[in-house]
Image (cartoon, helix red, strand yellow):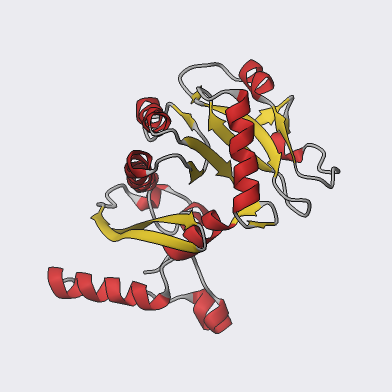
Length: 259
């Protein structure tokens, strides 16, 4: 299996937006496990990938993402490093030491790290934290760090950020928002105020992160170019696989996996 990974950083400055893209970075991962051990519905759910391959792919993506965050934490001065995801770490795929180093480097440059999660499995009292009341029409934040720390053991997974449920605009959704735990409460609130006051907030989600997501997506032409590059440089013959969805639904029979 050949995978392509891309990372994007978007920088908002006065009057303009800049971005950097890394990739496509190509990785070859042998899909070695016997796929016949899975039921047909399981194989379809994973796009034909084995669980071992999926774990390797997840580790590669996390490695690239953390590498970019390390680069940004070293280069950003007096700013807000806004990342996609939480500041929870401590698994083999996401070592706590690496995240702690990113936070410490940003702190040394007088910057603060803020993580925003579009979805979360975090619960308090058996209820997802994003299922709390969203009736308030004004932007607000709720610090649930004490509740979360009571609910979950401190090891091996560690909460390296103060955990908030935040609504950054009056028409916005609730998002889990993590801010470096080593920062003061005042610095954390100031960072959120600066973020809401300087970035465009689209339904409660920062525009810079939305642009980053858009720029990471591979277009159909880019996928064709990657396939052409692999075929030309590594003498690989591409074989198209029949797609029942394509046959039935034409251009609407899309899938997140491309053969």
